[in-house]
Length: 372
Image (cartoon, rainbow, N blue to C red; front, side, top):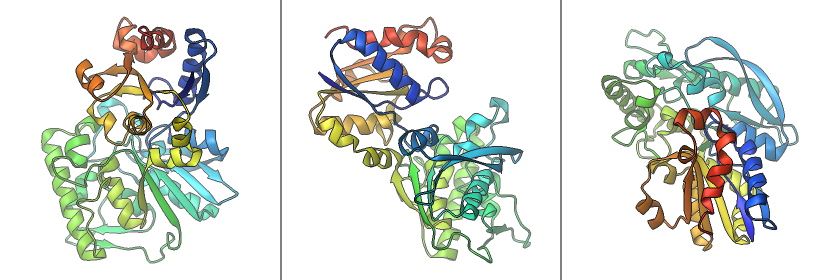
């Protein structure tokens, strides 16, 4: 039997490369003689940089940056000299994981550090930039990034505003850079969700709370995004209001469309096309995929949902391994999932599952095939 092992990382617990190794090792005991192929994945969020380096053997470049609250730091990105392509993971400088829980505040946080990495890559000579967005601590629609690239955001008195989520609704004028260093650069943005820029399914309402936003903050951030989109229309002659993925990473998707003239693609599609994963699945018998938390969002542009769609298209069995799941048994069986197994079914507590995933993965993997 031929298995494709293609999971995302378990966020905050275990990376996708290590996870593939454990699954492969355990399957050799559960199914001796099975043909096993491993393809660790990422969807544009946390872990994107690691997966790029894993497949493309890129050079790691370190550069000065700032964290989401503006504190100096050093961050890394990947660079392919053969094609002068920089691969930048937004979460490296603007990620939620960089802040303590009590520091989370999307009214104050900014993507300025990500912009610093983009500038560094362009000054290094990059002609193409692939920006993986996701896992962000921000809801500033990329104005922090734009500020690092020379844009200025002015209030009604003509004073420069700090580029953060709380100031979106105070912007009266957008001033493009005097020298546009992004001109002629090919920007691709890999995102992991399809949310619109604003509204009930937009950046602020769906993702603001996990970044520390209160209900009142969510309302203000959403109004800010609506206001900024009107300024986009007035200044650049375009709206990103209903563009799929514009709401990704606190509106970074929409901001990238305008400030970088980028094209948005699915992070999963980018990785899968690069390694020919669909063709590999077509020639397999079954697929094992997974992520840390399986919920309704997992089936909306994330790794699990995309792998499930491809596998169903080619009539392959799908097994899902996860840290925890909020999807009911009846629901995932109706989706055509063969079996779903969570670490929390084996660990004494969710905390144990997160802190010591390797201790409980063998049990969870065996549970996947307990009825085989």
